[in-house]
Image 1 (tube, helix red, strand yellow):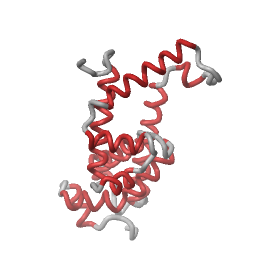
Image 2 (tube, helix red, strand yellow):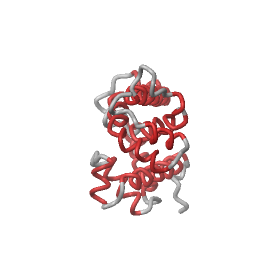
Image 3 (cartoon, rainbow, N blue to C red):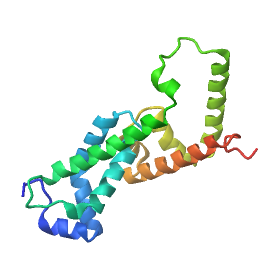
Length: 188
């Protein structure tokens, strides 16, 4: 067993889903997971936090597969899990892009129809943003408009990083639902 591998007690307790042991594994390896995921998806990708969370979820689901006596260090095994999750996210994101957006070169000037569509999208997004709580809106604006990291948002708002993740996840779900609605989610 390598020095950076979890000790046997922590590993046994994490396999039993004891909260303190699970937290210890995440805390010890979150920088690695976020680094791997952001390298695969790109630092600016909105999927980084979701992919990292999914990587940890898979880690816990398959924790019994890692053998402390085996050839791979825990960090190597976890980096592999994170890489696979990030690749899955990248594939899903690519397949969600319309073909014309993913392969055509951007034109220099929008057509009148495109300008109207963009204007309508901005209007719908503004209306959808109004549906968010002030706390969600603040986290979303810091992330989307200012490109702040989760840690920076937590420090800016004086909250835990987990709270930032939760607020952003709820905000994204609310925005997605509102933007699917032709009225932009606005009951007016």
